[in-house]
Each structure stands twice: as structure tokens, then as C-alpha cells.
Length: 320
Image (cartoon, rainbow, N blue to C red):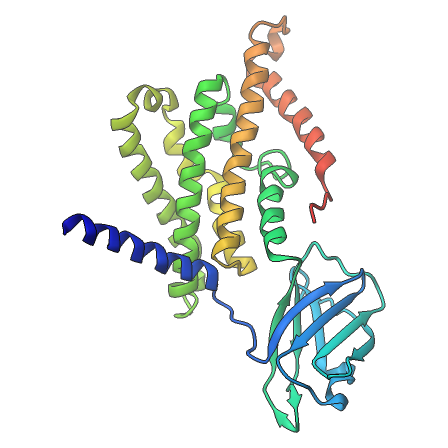
């Protein structure tokens, strides 16, 4: 009986977490079935019922912008309405940047003479493609070490040997995923509803400290050799810019649970990739004839700069 109760408890917890992650925190308008990009300069809106033609073809009822640039409004050149009056196609004067989600506002939707309220919806690429692009973006295209130059203290300190680098990369990934998901949950369900957004940095630092302390305690018992190899750098994860940057990005972009998980996991794996690449080169450099002036950190900074130049080749890359 105890085993069954435990299994039911685990299933219940996973179900609740799944509902939270799938549901996000910003439900779409009930009258809008779907929004999607079409071609390079069009957006298709599918309604649950017919809309009034006069309302649908009035461009003043639509307001759209890229999520990162809310001050730049996109100009609509044409509005088309299907015969069944359930599909509207917005055509824009310029091509849309489909790598970024767009926020679309529709003022006072009219259907059969009834006002259904204003709708705020998000337009983005195929959702699983969008999740994958977030993951690959954080891992490679926008690698936090080689493109944003964050977390360099721990990066240079633990990249001298492959074993230490891989161990720190895995530990860092666990810490960042755990702390980022807790930060997302607290921000969406505590800080935001009670208007405590101004405390987000303090709260996020506390969550990171809690996560690192938990990993420190577990690692000390499970793998003392790896714990000793990390030395002071495990504690420095608390002050790692990447661990703080990811929750702040999640809060700023209003990502839902799955999007937050992909970004956090991608950032952690990206840091692991950076550590592994750097440690592989530094092990070879120990056997190379490096001038005395450049030995140690100087040559490490030169190598990191070369990696950063290589990773710049991924900038602007689009997966979907």
C-alpha cells in the first residue's frame, strides 16, 4: 500500500508540473483558434466563428510589433477576409522577422454584431520548432561564454583538465536548470501577481545560492574527489553571471514553462560545450612550446578569443 501511495503521489506531482509547464501563464483569447506566419510578410488569424467584415478590414483595429521592440509598430498594407469570415490574413509592407515572436493586439473583436473584447495574442513559428530554436540558440548561436562573455571566472578556472571541465559543466547545467525553473515559478506565481517584480534580482540570487548549496552538499557525499577538484569554483557558481542572466531573461521575455526549460538547459549545455572545447585545447597547450610570457592565463585568453571568433560564424543563423 505504501508503495502504491508513493507511486500515486509521484504521478500527481508530475501531472501538476506538466499542466503548469504546458499551460504557461498567458492564455490566448477564447475566440481566436490560431495565429501563424504565412509567406514572408503575412500573418494568418483563424477565429472560432465569423467576424464582422467592417471590423475585420479596418486596419486601425490591429496593432502588431516584435516582442523585443514594442515601440516599433509594423505597418499593414492589406487585410483579406475569407468567404466564411473566419480567417483574416494581414499583409505587411515589409518582410517579417519570423525568428522573433510578435505581439498582436485586436481591438474590440466584433462577431455578428457582438463585441467580444480586445485580444492580445502571440504570433510565432511552429511551437516545437520555436522550442528547438531556443535550445540551439542558447547552446551555440548565442552561447553565453563565447558571444556574451559571461561566466568567465569559472570558465577559465575549471577548464584546465577535461575531467574537471565535464564535471563542472554537468554540475552547472543541473544548477542552472533547477534555479531557473524555480525562479520562473516564483516570478510568474508570486512576484508578478503581487507586484514584487522589483525584488526579482534579490530573489533570484537567493535561489541560485540555495541550488549551489544543495549541489555542494550532495557532491561532497557522492563524489568527494570531484568536489575537491572543483575547489572554490563550485562556490563561485553563485556569482556566475550566466546563472543570474537566465532567470532575468525568462522574466523579461515572459517565457512559459517549456520555453524557460529549453533556454536554461541550452545555456547549461552551452557552458559545458565551451568548457570541453577549452579544456581540450589547454591540455594540448601544456605540451606545446608556448613562450613563457604567454603561459597560463594569457594564452587561455587568446584561445578563448579565437573560439569567440569561430562562434561568431553562427550569428544570425536560423534553424526554422
